[in-house]
Image (cartoon, rainbow, N blue to C red; front, side, top):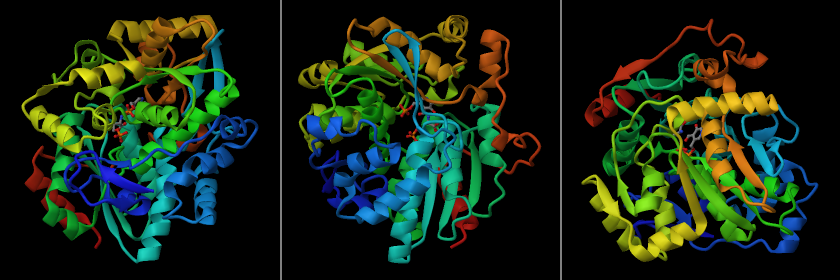
Amino acid sequence: MRYISTRGQAPVLPFAEAMMTGLARDGGLYVPEAIPQMDAGAIAALEGQSYEEAAFRVMQPFVAESFSENELRQAIRRAYQGFGHAARAPLVQLAPGHHLLELFHGPTLAFKDFAMQLIGQLFQVALAREGRRVTIVGATSGDTGSAAIEAFRGLPNVDVFILYPHGRVSEVQRRQMTTPDDANVHALAIDGTFDDAQARLKDLFNDHGFRDGVGLAGVNSINWARVLAQVVYYFTSAVSLGAPHRPVSFTVPTGNFGDIFAGTIARAMGLPVDRLVIATNQNDILDRAMRTGSYEVGRVEPSVSPSMDIQVSSNFERALFHALDGDGAAVAQLMQELKGGSFSIPQGALQHLREIYDSGRVSEPETLATIARVRAETGEVVCPHTAVGIKVADEYRKAGVPMITLATAHPAKFPDAVEQAIGIRPPLPPHMARLFDLPERVTRVENDNEALKSLILERRMA
Ligand SMILES: Cc1ncc(COP(=O)(O)O)c(C=O)c1O
Ligand SMILES: N[C@@H](CCOP(=O)(O)O)C(=O)O
């Protein structure tokens, strides 16, 4: 399996290289040249298997040229052994025909752990094999950062720099990033929004001299390996509700479009997915784009679901690439137009996207009201991102097609929002009991590439 860039001008790479590279050298995102297929028999055979076995079967064709079967199995075993639930990604029924897929049983309590724990393992195999070291720089609206720090802290051949928007993540999220005392971990609070952090990260990748000099690697969902690991739970949850014998739909709280794009890959591999529903908070660029065909960047407005406070949604580029039949030049042209603030999705591509995705937007009062309603009706306490998903899912539920809403984070990561909605502060699990007692270590940085480059050069342990 070879990986190509969505902009068509970067070297074609095998899986391990695409994983270590992050952003393609032409500014695009790596995608597989072809999507491996799973027929109905292979999908049905996932029934009753462990999460680890399902992960192996789903991912192996994508990575076979880079990792042996044994390397992949070991990496998967190590990645998920620390999860707090035997099923890894359990399903809970919310109402008849509506299920929550709980993706927050990993060490940092958000769905990011599924991919980050695995790529932490795969990076170690690849780095040891090549005797290399890398400088990971990540941009986060709260959850990617803590998951990356947890996966890479203390490793001798990796420095981790995480950029988060100052004052725009929850206190639990911030402390998860600022309290680890490992010398290779650097939390950086940028003066700006998540979009600014992500733009600076892409600038670093597009500065080839700097990139090559520090061995820059990325663990945001610009990294194909992040998307791949997230494909697995679409299969395991759908199979436990009757796939491949009946279709299911998914509603996905969406920001950078990585998680829902993983669902798109599951569907392209042969999983019978009826609808993939994009759920946004008030930062609703994706919902507007689906409704109007115009992708227009607005201001990032802080919300009670801060991890989705995103306007420039990285992985939408991957969806466009597929919708444009793999025309890298056309994608590059749209991304060029985006520098001016907007582009129009070509009509054929928009039609293709609408065949796969529905979308909805949830306001702040609606998010809080949904947390309260779910608590009253089911006893479940959900995080604000999950509440956004549940509200939109309810608009698209259909008789005979189970709806699975992705519960992307644990409510204890967002105690202020949950308390505002239901008057309860959900407790942190025991392994995080000391979070509020530990000293914080963070550096404020300007929203400026030269300042950022100097800081990284000064701090890395090369
Ligand atoms: C809790 C939570 N929910 C939803 C999302 C949106 O996921 P994606 O960016 O993959 O669309 C994020 C972060 O991105 C998140 O941290
Ligand atoms: N919500 C994310 C934003 C970054 O998304 P990624 O999936 O591209 O890493 C976060 O919590 O940081």
